[in-house]
Amino acid sequence: MKTRKLVVRRPITVESFKLEKVWSKEGGVVEAFEGMYALRQEDIVEVTASRAKQLLTTSPETFSLKGREEIWLFLDNCCEEAEEEIVDFSRLWEEYRSWSEKQGKTSMLSKEDFEKELSGLFEVVESEGKTCLKGLRLREEG
Image (cartoon, rainbow, N blue to C red; front, top):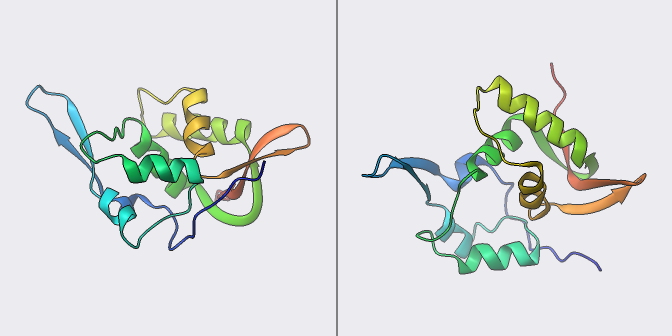
């Protein structure tokens, strides 16, 4: 079954989603997703049809960003979009773990949640018996 995609206006970045943290009265963190309404307007980003439906039908008040901010930061810092490139999920996961440790993160998404989030943003393909993401590559360390 072929994955349907929406039209891309611009790449996914942390800045484009205007992520910010707001402390709640109870002392916890409430994560706001101010760019949700931008998704409903002209700034649609490329996502699978099912992920788009989820994003476009969820209000900012009920949309949970728990863990997602870290994914956007990881993608912005360690990856770049590359239309015809593929990257192995396992290698991407190891890079995410390494990046999280270097950032001093005390908690990370589980491997399953990490894969679930990224498979909602990029096309999943099989290559040489491995599960990979198409349209993404790791940045060269320099």
